[in-house]
Length: 233
Image 1: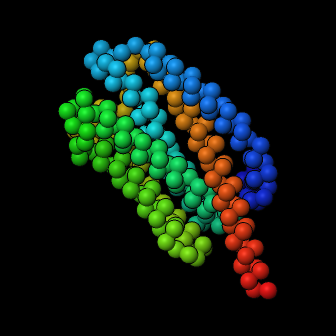
Image 2: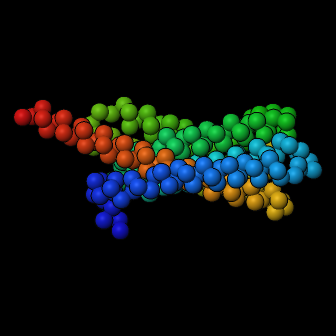
């Protein structure tokens, strides 16, 4: 299957019909998740502010997941020269950056009334910020190097280095004391259901945006190759 989809034109032909279905399914699941979120009971300690969790937690999870996938794609691009690997990693980076940035913003909004401050340099918050900066550095590095092959190689190395931060983000609440709560979510089903539905919505959103962005990247690279070919004639 990997070799079958390695051809950019074949990949676009197979995945392009999936995009409207993913977009429609995302819209349905998002509306369902938001309805469940607003209909869920207040937390006995946090009140209505607990509803920020339905955006914050899925966004944080997605930020980690997307960077992990970006690292895998970068590995295949750097080691095996997979035809679509760099395009996939490049397409994922802005999506992961938005998820991580949203996690940081909603975390600050959630923490302010709970902790009395929107930010503290504890392990989880700091490592999450470092993750966001790795995304930004990847995007900036790719944009700053004109040679596509060299840009792919340098960005792949950067992405692989950034993988070291993922376990730090995940285990930071266990390794260091801070304001951030632990990784386990101990609550009732009435609060867990909206969370799981919003996680599903965010996965569908990622899949849709990724297919749109990688198709655009394939078309852009095809255009650049055609322009370079015409310039030599």
